[in-house]
Length: 401
Image 1: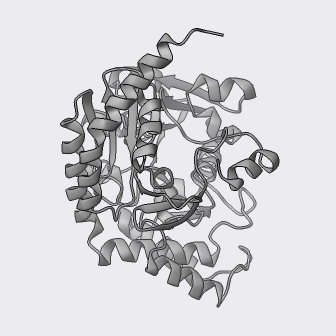
Image 2: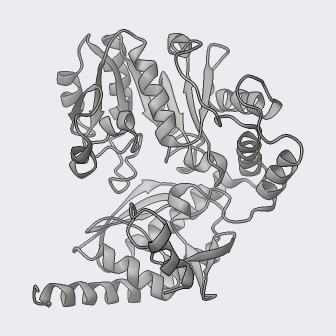
């Protein structure tokens, strides 16, 4: 254990458990720990580090902006903030009727969207089982996992949870009292769960039949993660009323965005919501650099190619019974409850992996990951999974204290 990890326990609140590594630097899709060991990063800061680590374009954009104008508050406008809002609206394919609210995280983006829905005059929301929308009280009200919710109840709002990818359940739950249907185009924290091709279109129809909004949480799926700028753009005819973004948008610099169109774009008026740091020029400049680099380096196409490579190598592994997702957002279902042990075995082998449940691994690497990085994973993964199975069996045979 490094000195940093030992000091962590004495200074940082224990909300995440003890850190497994102390990381000190990164480059591309690789990171190094305090002992100098190198790892291929297949978690990407939980789908955040779109350009990997220390990308020159991001470093230059942040450095240049910070040396020019760092923070001025939302009493004033700055060029990066306005340019980023215009860029997001254009990437969504929306027109002049759309508007953007900037914040600092996905949770905050969802909190703003929740407040926006209240301005419809309705209070009911319909969300999905398996959903994750954040940890603040409002965002948590939309998050289905009981272990996250129950310690903090009563939570705000009137939220009905329905099974994901179940059109009939949506039909039954939504009526003229519902303000919005809230969905992830692909459920991330649930383990990369992909709905049927018609599900989001059906959700849009149901919402609009009842005068409700369709709100898509693209915090994890957005900004080229699935091979399109936004995951819902992989489907024909899906046009949400509200989209929330964060994670990959800033490439590691904290930023969130709530984008709304049509009548939804006018619901939040002066005094209804605010933020001190949201949309500050440094974060906005970082996001613009991310978007510019994705275009300049052809990363949308690269995500598709590397995503196909990742899916294929996972499907070839003994013990992997299902591979889900799109682009560089993939889930692997194992044939037994040894995902946690696979993360540990991967770390020993020089790979940062992520388990979203006992049998589920999630892969959300930087968009700049190379074919060679994935070849290395393919070569190492059989032994990693074998060691994980053995470790899990050993843990099961260990006598209970």
